[in-house]
Length: 120
Ligand code: AMP
Image 1: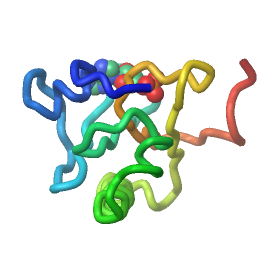
Image 2: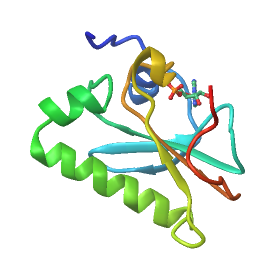
Image 3: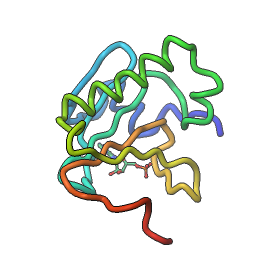
Image 4: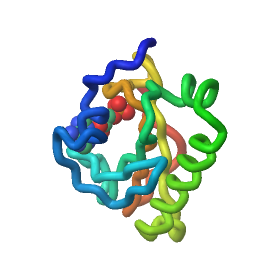
């Protein structure tokens, strides 16, 4: 899938629409989800035009891959999620339930999530 530069997270990265940022570095931006599904629900996105983990893992420069993954860990620790744990999720494509076509990692915390996912 070609990257759509008008997706909502691209607009957030360009500063065209606001977000409640919790972390930013040269590789990543993290902000609160506008429609939280848990007491803590933060999205971490790379500052680069990738649709999902598929094109990101195949095409992003190694420095960006490392920088982004490290940012995800930094955000989780800063949010205090290391203990008692949290859930990390990346939806990909139609069956994955991906709505925004810019790679994003969901970080969910503040409650117990049980095992794995709800049945469709
Ligand atoms: P996904 O279904 O994995 O693509 O998740 C997209 C997420 O983006 C959803 O949880 C939305 O609530 C969230 N979202 C959509 N627009 C915004 C926005 N402007 N600011 C923050 N989160 C958003």
